[in-house]
Image 1 (tube, helix red, strand yellow):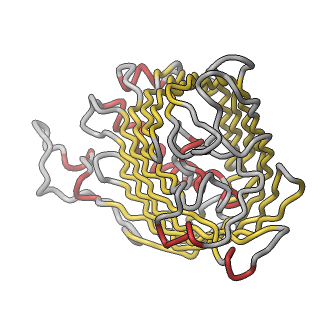
Image 2: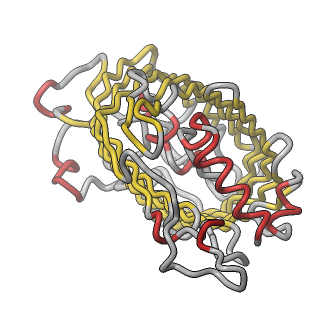
Image 3: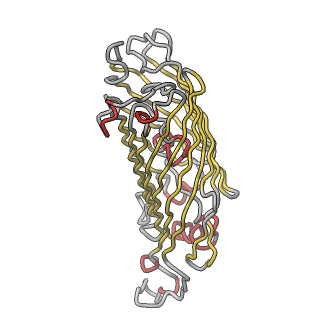
Amino acid sequence: MKKLYILIFISVFSLPEFWGQDTRFSQFTNTPLLINPGLTGMGNGYSRANLSYRSQWTTTDNSFSTAALSIDLPIYSDKMNWKKGYLGAGLTFYNDQAGNGALSTNEANLAISGIIFTGKKSKLSLGIMGGYLQKSISPDKIQWDSQYNGFEHDVSLPSQENFIAVSAGAIDLSAGMSYKYASNEVAMSSDGNGNNMVFEIGAAAFHLLEPKLEFLQNPNAQVSRRFVGHTRFLKSMDSSPLALGGNVLYMQQVNNTETTIGFEGRYVLKGNTKYTGFLKDAYIGFQLLYRHQDAIIPVLSYKFNNWKISTSYDYNTSELGNVTGNVGGFEISIQFNDFEGQLFNQGNKYINYQGSGGNF
């Protein structure tokens, strides 16, 4: 436990670039707006909603938890009747509690994107995202060395720590672009009749203005820019209910880099017909991800109708396992795609699925 406190103190108080570093989800394909504002409105169907929750180091008294909610959708497609593209809009909310509530990060953002069709099966998006970033800390929840009376920790003793502020906020701005190619607009069938392929690639920059926060003992604490690159490929196998592919995520913030690569597979349980399109299919999905010098992450998903549920667990492979007792992080996400257009009455409006790739 003492080692864990030391780790938290070093990362939160001694090195500002570390407390300013963004946390992340292992299931990055299920948190699109946290990866790239350019993915706004690039989902399948009409509206898309994602809810994710992550908990790590649960065997300690200082477990970390992170939650995120986002929704994005095409807008004004019926008004514009654009044949060459459309607009997308999205909202995302994010909360991270680090070290038993000692450090909290909250952020709310609005995203807008412009999407153009680059071919019958492809489209390109440019998105911007702005909102408010807030950080806070509860010093009374931390055990300080000065509060040790020789026998035990005594909260009545002064901590002898002087903070400029225990809560601070700032305007935040991010931007990104993404490209998507989809060879078919419907999901593959369970009998293997279908030749679907999806390829996605994108890049983004978060915290463009590098907002400064008057926080803790630093009057000019800064949230550094985070750069992201990502790609994904998935293809159905001929005469088989299988689809295989992979994905890559690269992030850099200050001198810290993170690279995650992985294999992805799907097995179709219930396919589609030419009459139902991609509305009622079901599949089991599996990913095996490797975060370089950090963790191996198996991900299991189940998709039915408009819903997809995914769970994963991080198995630590780094020296951090010596501190956490080799206990990694559990994560669950729920995704909803409104394929029928029931929300916001979009099903009765003009929406161009060109390059959407259906459910694939």
